[in-house]
Image 1 (cartoon, one colour):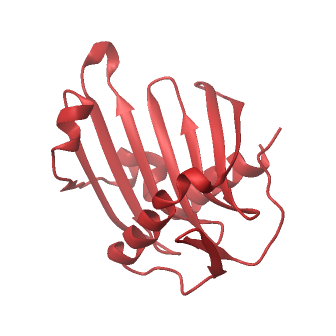
Image 2: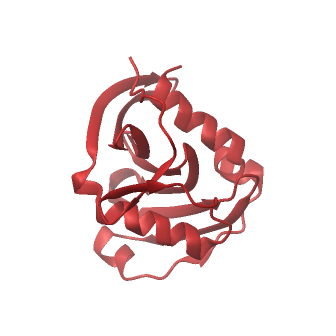
Image 3: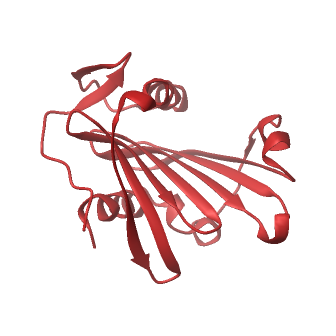
Length: 168
């Protein structure tokens, strides 16, 4: 089973309207602006899912949020982690991860911003609870590809999003 979407001209969410795709964002501020516009209209997007995807480390509940027939958000819910993929023109521009520690040991949020070829920036914050996390500022992450895993490789990030949408 997949969350597949029909092919359509590129679109981005802007105040509830579908508009022609502009240039791919090249800065964190451009990416953040696009993601903020998508989040602002999230409750108006078509929701597909959740579907259960079996992975090596357990099941994942995946939901796609669609504007027209174009995916703009993919939400993956693991037992102790959430991933939010924000897409523009079917490419991930931002990955937001929220990881819940065992036995109420805290919460960590990480954000990765992508151009078409590279990780533009990665940042994170960590706290004992969600309330206290929301009061903290982000700090720049200093992660190598080995430490972060797939998140530091835009090709792998996009492949993971595509696999959620179209199955694998």
